[in-house]
Image 1: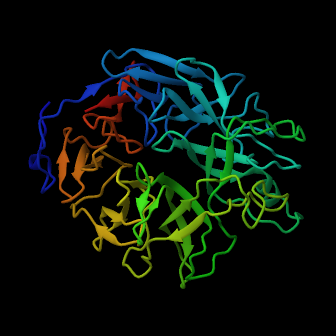
Image 2 (image 1 turned 30 degrees about the vertical axis):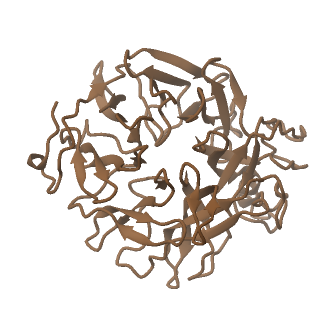
Image 3 (image 1 turned 60 degrees about the horizontal axis):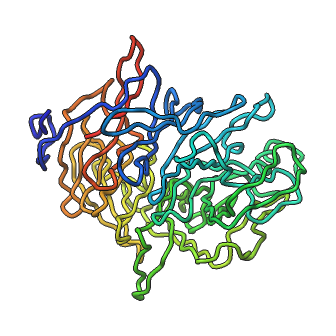
Length: 449
């Protein structure tokens, strides 16, 4: 199956080399890839869950498939009526982290954005999950524990910390009651877990449990952002910046940082997403201006030394803000010099843009005639961005913005799925999914090119 170029309808597409697409899975079930870190560190396996579709959390297994042989092994099976999904590999060790839903769910305690947690499995000891984050749904609240749901867990490039998004069950319960005392609302935030546990919590709630890692929130949101300010009401779709951080404006190295999207309010009262960054200190266990554990009416607060900063200011553009469709996560180049995101150009076409983490300098990278249509990843050498466009999986040159088509154009059913287009650790292969008919039923299956 050779690379197809302009004959498939995309002006400016050029070839890198002939590409061969291979289907890895053929089971009569859905296969969902996470948007990053689906490859084992040695590049031999791809991890996934068996949800029917990305928008439904119904998987009972985490599996991985051998890229060479197609052999499938179960890494974890969720017990007692629970579900699991959104799995990512550590880039340095044979272990995975994923979302785990409540065991023995009931009508008043089932899976939701505020009732989920992280779980870790050592691939050498499959089927045995350890709790990433402690959960503490009623006072007394313990530093290092959360009180809600964590989601899309991603190891840092050195494999030592884990980022995630978070929503707060304690505050969500208050939101639901008309006579609740004044409190911060439940809003999506970004958190980080570090291996400083175990964290033990009181058994003041039947769903409380201990965790192996120390978890904190590193973003700050407010109920009503001031119009035209840098205050935010939602933080989401984060990504680690660089393999080893990034160079600041004064030439020093910021070792760890997370880029993320955040909703701001314009002077006209509209809301859109901008790019922000959280610079992280080496020690995330020290309280800042408010308790790490939160209170009965406030969410956990960022640790001392965390700096939250806005990078983009797009309110004056014809199409302001970073787009949220296609859903994508901010991804930084391996050297940390560029953060890639998707925004519309003046014609309304979704293009790649890059943002410098040091000063927010923003550049339009691509000038395609049609939208970029998926989440994306960088190649390990920083030369390429892998994504879908015009019904194909392909790569965009990080310097010129030229798109190289790697799979034949296919629109509609059977087109590459938008959730994940993920480079292998050696940069030679890209994992993605397509919908395929298996036993007269359509399921997403895993492919590589």
